[in-house]
Image (cartoon, rainbow, N blue to C red; front, side):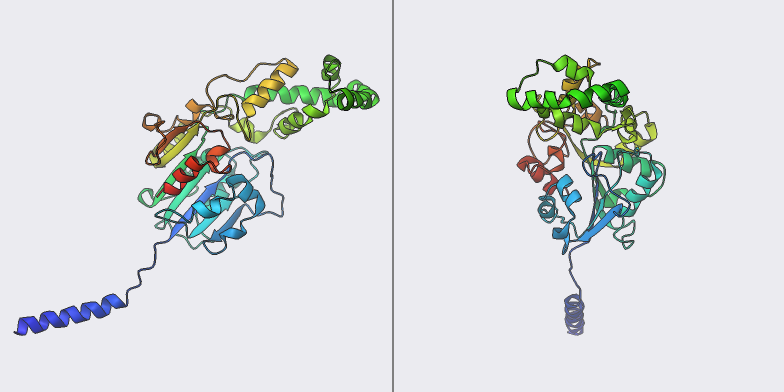
Length: 353
């Protein structure tokens, strides 16, 4: 009888104790590291890292939302392990390469939520394109650390084997610079450009294409192509950011990526790159300027598929299921971020734990 009384008392005490326990959901800090972004380069007034939480994620600033897509506000709240806090980088990846110390510092800051997140906090890290190189370079150099069993790292279109298209890009930048700085060309251009513009607008013909090319004249329907590629150029060559992605011979970085990688998406296109296809653009310009063409291997419009799959190369599958941690998909470089709201991509991102 005494034993029963003791057991009853123990049960009551246990119920009282358990009733005071808070079963709040575990914290999940999510980190987003972007890649080359020629369309939105931060100024000195911008911060290199922007922090948010689940309550104010809808106020995400435009450059970040446009890069990752508006849907990022939703899919990070869905799934089994939603994000409770966020760190988004906003870096100058055009004039600075992936080994830039400032970019490494920003990555390490993003791993913490306003310095409140310690190494034991659960994290999900999403890396796109050159962002993979920046992040893993920071870890490889011990600029910051993560705990493997507390951190999931997902690579999206990572150029782990480099981007061979930088070589023709370099040549095109040189051609554009050579033409634009030639005083004779500038004089001819100022004299006849109005006439060419008139022909272009009224007739829509390219009969004077050779003369236009030699004088650096651009018909209006071609203008956007030149404006796009010039964003990747600095003083007659590819900018430092793209240059740093040309050939990756950083064994320590690759080993670090193999050690911490939790999953990845690598893409390929059928020649119709969609939102942005650097290969397609360079193929047009290499013909225009008569320089070497980009490497023709399968790519996502920017990064060769073999370059992306260089990390955990034996684990990739192509079947469209969200249970695949490593996935080769028929989507382009921008689709893979979720920015174009491709349903399969969004579902895969939502399913990451």
